[in-house]
Image (cartoon, rainbow over all chains, first blue to last red; front, top):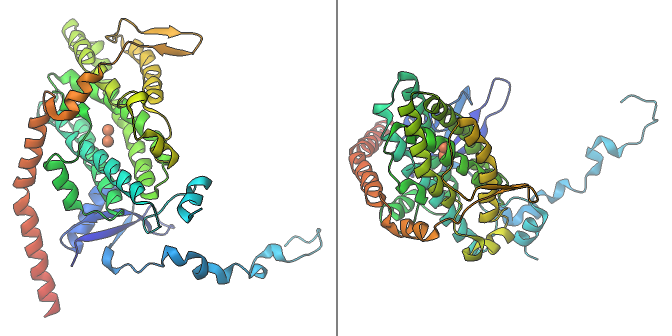
Length: 90
Length: 306
Ligand SMILES: [Fe+2]
Ligand SMILES: [Fe+2]
């Protein structure tokens, strides 16, 4: 297995884990320890995930347009699509 | 217009798997790697004083600062790897001298005052260089720089505080502080690189949104920032030509000896050989740890699979 890991940190309770970078480690346990030392030296996190980089499946940037296109023509999914009287507070 | 060109024109960020010109990729790998190497080699001049810090407080601060520099190196190596280069290749390029690191770290730290001076001037110059990189067109590099810049302000402030304590100390301490500033001033100005006229790749890097300001612009910005600070410190800067130009609203300063910069970059600085030898020894001394971790991981993976 490759020794590259992606690191995700939850900055505080109530927020999601966010990708912060990557690091090299022999196994998951060491990856967690290194992640703590590299990415949270000033209390930047309350929880860390490490994921082997090879396990990440990503959408391709080349097909960005076609992949996300189906969402573009469905304007009726947005509240601004609807006309309601001005005095209505919704 | 390619998707890369339109993204650059809009000021949008380029992300790792986007299509990009090979030269853009190569330029970034070279710049980010050189930056990472500088952080890693940059641990040495100050690291040499950790065991000799004058108080427990200063020792804890210095240790934290040097650890930060290690962290900076690691953020940057991680950013470089998103461009498709392996970490091991970068280490190898550093250790074999194929890639460079900042010339500033090839000067020796002769006294304790050098540590404060480095924090004030060298980290100060690094901040001036790095803040614009937070808006660099390559996403992972820009994000790494945001993280680094947040940490650098502690570096500069602790240096200033330490140097101020010396400057206001005994006459001997004051003289030691002044001597350190005298030695580090000109090398700090060299950190901004050759003058604009001799900076051949600048135009392209600017067009690509990697570089935002020219070397000379940043050098001037640094001088303007530091001159008033030197006054607060009660120390002088070793340049008889320093004079405020009211019309420009900036400080004039004397000519920087770029021959010295070229020499140090070429490997002929006072500490080039020592820095690389130290780095190689650290790499060799750590080999058994990495090997043990690898074997341990393999054994556990096997046990888990069985
Ligand atoms: Fe740094
Ligand atoms: Fe620093």
